[in-house]
Image (cartoon, rainbow, N blue to C red; front, side, top):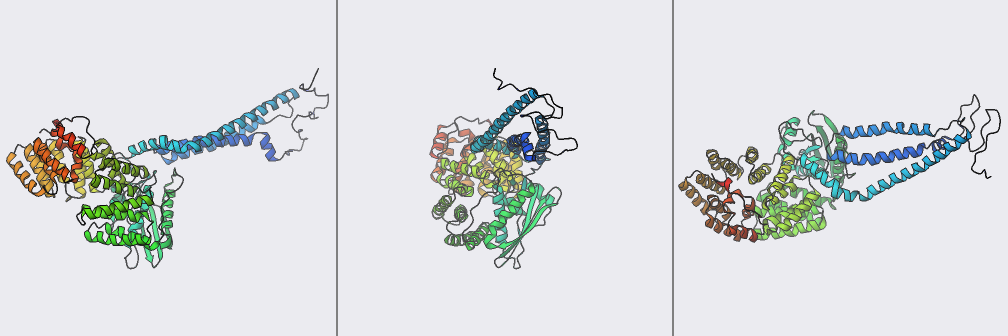
Length: 638
């Protein structure tokens, strides 16, 4: 009979004789406690390495999704730290039992010893299979992560952002991951480098805005604190942020010194500060260092792993000219725009491959046309050529896509093209107040009123001191029938800029829709723009059944607005239900390409005439999508 697989019986011998192979090493004689095998061999024998490797792999598989989910839910930082702590504590609790389980007593009988080793070999194979499976899962995760981010993680993250972008209410907590970059102070001896200080602050805002995990207050709001006494708590409350970044710039020749400090708003304590010395040639690198230090000080992990990559200028003199052009463009005066054009054109001549210069040039031309500082026929083609060059140089410039989107909206009336450009900008910089504002404006034109409200709310959240953000939000709320919110938004806009045009008219219409006729008339009389004042008075007088006064205001409005804004005249006839003259003025607005005509789909003043077939025809001529249903006119009856 074959005995190949039958363990031999142990011979009679003293108990201290070691068993024959395959027994483990002999028991050390009394008085000798040393280990006969090297420590690494011992670890291998006890499967500690495999168990440890498997534990680390499984921990990573758990931690990575947990981090993403916690980030999307805006969980506090300690929640991530708690999970990591549990993993760390679990490591010895896993490895030590593995060591004990694999230990083989020296006194074990041969038959039991053989079974023991067979079991350990099976466990060894299972550990190998498990490690291979975990490695496969990790590899699969890395391969499919781009797809998951686009189709699953990204949309969930956007939903989380939507809740994060809810309107600010009294007592609501300020997002922990929020910051405002205050205007940097020019500390140069001659105090003639403010354009450089402003440019540095703007670049930091642009860079930090591209970090999805961080909410950044827009420049238009934070710039209101320029050259004013600074109280940390007050500024943070008005900007709705948890942190403030402030600093100064000192330039001497080609040498630059930048000082920056990050302040926690609720305590006023300085979280981080540093001074950076360099030259104008490495200004971009200094900006990246400051932004990186801010991220590190705020103690959160970037999902992308690093700061966004930006295009660096190839010529420092050109970059300096670009900053000066941007500085003068913000004066919004004819002289300022003229100087900005000169600086930008010189910058492009020195560095034609720098996209931001082309984008800024396009915006300047567009603004000059809008304000009447340059004929439209001259300015807009130049604006179009400049922004197309910008996008060709950098297709990932959200600012350039927004600039082109506005040209499609205001000049071409090509809503499909405008929607395409704005959607690209939203994908590139969903946290930019300017991008959100552009999206809200487009959606309002297209009649997507709820989407418009959502975009304007997000813009206000990031730009809480910009009056036009609130007035546009008021328009969207009014179009959506949310009168209380619309009234609040218009009043906030008036509080920020009491003399701004249209806002009193907008508030007056909201009060009129709410049945407060006397208050509505008072607001119309406060309106600073003559056209909107006369339009508002004509409408409110009509609601009060004071027809003679309504006609008188309409007559004066017709004389003033017939050349530049026939749409405003049409709104009065539309509200009064005079269908034929309303469409006559709307057709005239269409022929003259009156820019305000593009708001017709969301304008409640035309509710009484939307059932007329000519309304759908007019929308078609303007390239706007049809309503698809007939709205109720009850809200317009007072």
